[in-house]
Length: 414
Image (cartoon, rainbow, N blue to C red; front, side, top):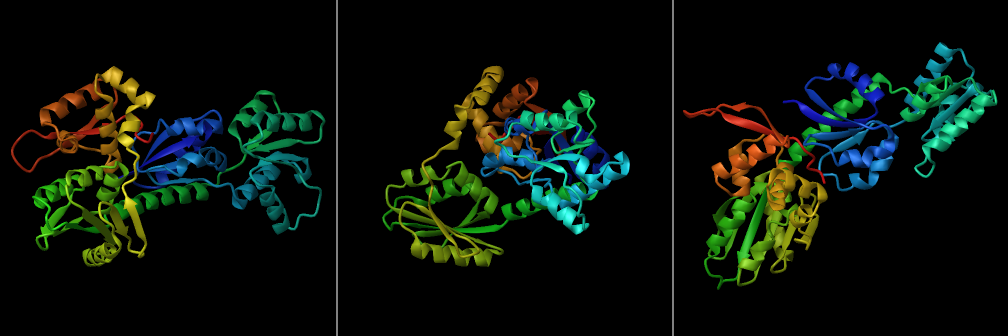
């Protein structure tokens, strides 16, 4: 199965990546192009369902850093480093016949340049250096390069910013882009695959839960069945007041993130304890759940991880679905498709809870807890307005027509 990588980058980097990417098998690239790295946060809001996010440079990473803390899928970025600097300076000297002191370079850290020059035992005059900072407008960097050229202090500009390259080229000023070595790009693509696989492995990690009811609780089995459905768990009764559940990390985290467990304590007329244990095996997860029960307070959720870290109490008071329903983007979708904002929010939550990008009407029907016919009407509206697309068919093991496979065609990472 291919790893789908969303790439936020310039058009020039996209062209280079398309040439190189065929050397890394089983990947699918989905590009989001900026004219300037400052556009990265807005582009992140447009990213469609994928396995991993790749930012093409340190600068777009810095602009996106505040969003990446809460980013729901793995991400990485192509870091500017000394290998990149060395390759670029070597190219400048070999192709443009310039000396180092006649270069003007904008760079994320001047230390990179200094280290490279020390490594090659260069003792001559230094190049003109400008450190890139978010507080420094791109236009200021451009102006400084132009001033150095007009005063005939330099013969060539090396820039890390593609917009500066385009502007200097238009002015006829000699300029080259900071090179992204092929090896660095391939290494980052392989890292993207590894991050995706690790996340999927984590999501499949074993989770065991224990529910302990007050001895006078009426009909606890009904509440256990409701909880098991919410977290896609199997369960077994230990005694009259205690039940065990078995699920995966991914299913539990989705329920916690979406605050789907909040209602559990509101339907129970008596106090109840709910704990979960993580583990590399069911036995380890069960042991951790039993330890967590010793520390748990009633009407709250506690988790003991495989690293013996006790987390809780959960849930918090933030309900994401209600917040997403107020998102202007979701409201616009609702207006176009005639679907309720709440249904669109539930579809977004469904996408985030799955490891596979493709799904059937049956999969979505189970999540929304509506009939198959209702789900098919919802999907038709999404497809008609290009918010979803049919990408294939799934053959059933029984007689009957193949089931269509769908994929969402809008950003779910708001």
